[in-house]
Image (cartoon, rainbow, N blue to C red; front, top):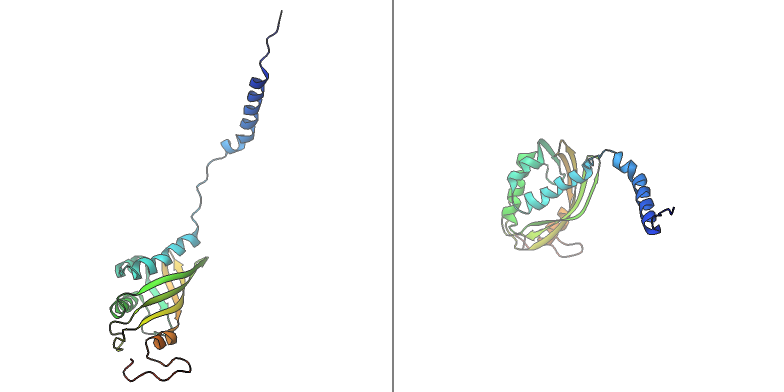
Length: 186
């Protein structure tokens, strides 16, 4: 009596399949875990929306969604703006004074409940701003905002901007070592 043997390639393929099944067994038995949302990524997206959607697209109503009802702004150059409503009015004034205003995000960093945005605001001064008549001069002003988020909204903001450089670009203050600006701001 002759014994029939399986050809070697068939035996090798069967052994390889068995090895793969044994190696994959822990993955097959482990339940799928859905990834936990990363709060830093979510917080950065909210901060980005403030500048790119609310400010650049002139959508002030979006701020009701992005800023907490008790939002507080700390800005040493503008102590009159402190809450969500006065912030919306302030931005609306910017849209009138600088119809082509555009915020650019230069850096965006998040850690825990904080997001830091280094930004540049550029535009042309074509309308009155806080009693200053239009100069029709272009500007690019850099600044930094630090946001504290709670419950998916910006609860607090600390903002600092190069207001002196901004005023110099508009001709309202002399440049370092330069002549004084002309009477009337330019």
